[in-house]
Length: 308
Image (cartoon, rainbow, N blue to C red; front, side):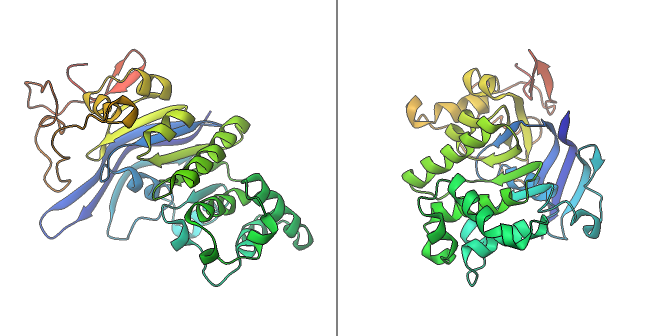
C-alpha cells in the first residue's frame, strides 16, 4: 500500500519577470515501510517537493496537482485540518537543524514536547527522552538532555532534530538534506542512524538529498530531479547501479570513487527553461527533436529521455 502519492505536482513562484517553475509535473509514490530518496543538484527542486507535502511553501507559491497521504488528499487541506497531521502522522527533519531548535530551551525538553503532543504521560517522558537519545547513538543522553542547542555540534543537532521528529511515532518521515554541512564523523553517524531506521523498517521515509552515497546506501526507490522535473525513477539499486538517463550517469561519474569526472555546463535557470529537453546543452548525445520528452517506461523504470 502507498503511504504517499504525488501526482502531477506543479509549484511556481512569481518573479519580477515572469515566473519560476520550481517543480513541474512531478509524480511518484512511497510505499509503507519504504525509503524513497530524491536526488539532484542544488536548485533542482528537491526541497520544494518536501515543503509542498508539509504545507510549508510561502503563500505566494502557486501549487497544483495532487498529494495523497494514506489515500487522503492533503494538498488542498486547509491549514487547520492539516495541522493534525504535521508533527504527528507526518514528521519533518529540516535542512537547518540548529535554526529549527529553540536556543532557550534545553534539548531534553524539546524532545519531551513532541512526546507530549503524542499523549505520553508526564511521568513517563524523562525515561522516553533518555531512551530515544540513546537510540540515536548519543554517548551521554542525560547530558544532552540538559544541554542547550548551542552546546551541541552540528551533527548532534541533526540527530536531535531527528529524535524530535521520531518522538511522535510518525507514519511518514520527510528528511531534507540530513547530511548537508556535516563533517566526516557527523555525516558517518547520521548515515548509521538512517541505516538503523532502514533495518527496523517501521518508518516510511522520503529523503531529499544531494548525497548520492547516502541515497545509494539507504534508498529502496530513487528519483533523480533536474530543472524541477523527474528524469529517472525506479529501484535505487538499479538507478545508481545501472543508470539510464545521461544526467544520472553524469552525477554518478562525478563521485570521488568514480574519478570525479564533472559534467560540462550548468543547469538552466528555472525562470528561462529551454524548449525541448532541459538537459540538451549538457548531454553528450543531444536529441534531434524540439519536443519535450515525457516520462516513459524502460524495463520497469521511468525515464525522461527520447534516446532511452
